[in-house]
Structure formats: structure tokens, C-alpha cells
Length: 320
Image (cartoon, rainbow, N blue to C red; front, side):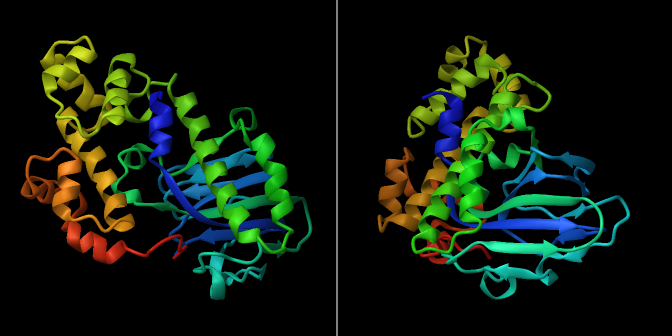
């Protein structure tokens, strides 16, 4: 597999709530106290996005806002418009305040704000990213990703399905919505990564650099291998010291530390999805001793493997 395929394969999207927003007049929405990731696609009209990390951005028809790990922002009809908290808006269908925590909603949410002036229509998608804290890619991405219509790729196919499900309450809705959430988010992120690969200033993980990309691809293909710095430098066809410096500058961690990050991310899934012993997991991931695995896990996750398993087992697909 190529590097982008490896990165996307490690992204696990669980559950999804689809919503249709119809907003008119001098409206404003404050996205606060909302922890899931979300994707907002403007099917018509325009609005402003205001956030501490991005400042003020103008979103136009056909553009999509992707916040993989959530993020507080304001969506406004105009600069200076008053905003209302997301939870206090007049939701219909899948009720925000009472049901947003359900893993499998029976129908989509609908939000209508009436007023004079142009109407902005938005297709929304809320979702959870499993084991997001341990995923090496997510820490490298901007809080908000904006994609233009010509960069969205599969959205031209997915948008009609989102439109249909936004009005559907038939049996089986939850299963289809969950799969469509995964396809939508993976497709959006793929478009961003492909675009970023040609833009060094915005590319996460140094994927624009062919030498580093070769090493990252090799690590993802065999994360349990006993990787040595000299071996990785040879793959990059660079001197060891030069490779270490370039890799660290572009990826944000040393080559060996990145190998540990990949292994620990695998471990978080194995811990919650299986009953394998800590010793067996450490051996499968290429650690020479259980103690080394426990130390690496605690350093990256802030808790022991046993604590992580106890806290996350059975926690699947909840949106709060």
C-alpha cells in the first residue's frame, strides 16, 4: 500500500449522525461543548467561520468544513451576528439534547432557523474517531480543514446519499448512516492529504518529501519490525545523521519514537477489541519485554495498558 492508504487504514470512524440545516436571516451558531468530530457541507448559500485557530474564514456553496477532533467555532450569517449555542437551537428529528449520545440514532437531525434574507443550506455529519489520541496522523492535522468542491472527489457521489438519509427514517438507517460517515470522512481526509502532498508548508508528516515518505511507508507496512536508525536511513538513501534531522523536522518526532507511536496506536485497538494478555500484546508488537511495552505505552498515553483497557473496553461509537 502507499503511505496515504496506510494512514487512512489506521483511522477508525465509529457511528454517525446526519443532519440537515436550513438557515435564514441574521443567524449565528456557536459550536461549543461538542466533543465529536464533524463535517459540514454547504449545499447552498454562504457563511463565516470564526475560531481562535483559523481566524475568520468565508465558506461558500460547495465547500466542506472538516473538524476531525471537533473544535469550538462560530458559524455566522455575517460578521457581528449574535450566536446561539448548538444545544439551544430548535432541533427536530434526532433530538440534540436528549439523544445526541446514542450510538445508533433512528433518524437524522433537522435544524431550521427562519428569517428574512438569503438561505444557507448545510448537510452536517457528526462522528467519533476511535483511539484518536494515539493516532500519529491526527496530531499533525489542522483543527479545521476546508475543502473546495473540486477537491472533494467522492463527495459528488456521497452528497446525494447524505441528502437522502437526511430525510429518511426507515429501518436500517443507523447502519447505513454509520458506514456513510466512515466513507465521507475517509474521502474528505484523502482529498486533503493528496492536496497536501504537493504543498510542503501544509503537508502533515512530511508526506511531500519522497525520502521520508518511503520510510514512513516501510514503517506502516511492518510496524513490529526491530527498526534501526541506520536501516531507515538506508531506505531514505541519506546519511544517518542527516536522515534523523530531516525526519524529526518534518514529522515532529525522531524515527524511533515514531515507530513506538505506530505500535502503541495498534496496541490501543488490540487492548479494547481482544482479551489478549499484556505480555502477548507486547511480544506481538515487537517489544523485547513487557516492561518496555508498558513504559512506552504509559509515556505516550499517560496511563498503563491495563488502565486503558478498563477505561475504553466496550466504549464503541458514542458521540459524547
